[in-house]
Length: 194
Image (tube, rainbow, N blue to C red; front, side, top):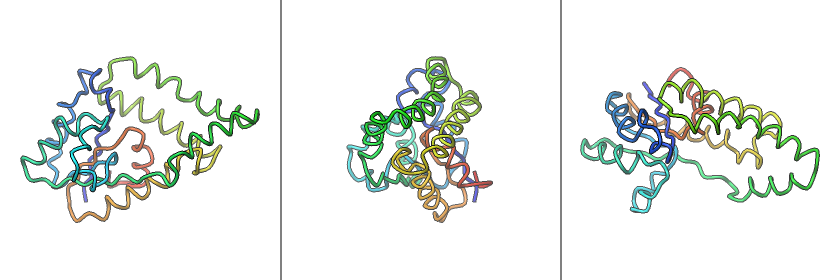
C-alpha cells in the first residue's frame, strides 16, 4: 500500500496563494490515487449536501468534484469525540485550579509560534517543515502532561482509529487529505506507509 498525505489548512487556503485549493487538487492529481480519504468527514457525511459547508475548502471546491469526474471513491474516516463538551469542560475546570491552569497555559504557549506562522504566506514545504512539527511537539507535550483524554479531546485515540480505517481499505494507492491537526499522530500510526 502506498499512502500520500496531503495537509488541509481549512480556510487558510484562501490566504496562501502558494498553497490554495487548486494546489491541493494538483497534489491529489499527481499522486494518482485509486481512492481518496479525508480525516475531516465521515463517509456518511457525503450523503447530505451539508458536508460542502466544511471549513476544509479544498474538498468541496476542487478535490471532491475532481474525484467524482474520475469515478475515484472518496472515504471519510473522521472519528468523532466521545464527549463533544469534554475539552471545553476541562478548560473551564482547569481555570479553577492554579496548578492545573499553569500547566495548561504552559502547554498552550507552545502554539504561540503557530499564530505567527499562520500570518505569513505558507507553502507546502513550510507547512511540512514548520507547521506540522510545531503541532507534533505541542500534541506530544499536551498528551504527556494531561494524557490522552478530555484535555486532548482523545486526539491520539481518535487518530489511531482513523489510521486503522485507512489501512483496512482495499486499495494500493490512497491519497489522504488530512487536517493539519491530525497529521502528526497519523504519520506515527501509519508508519512507513505514509
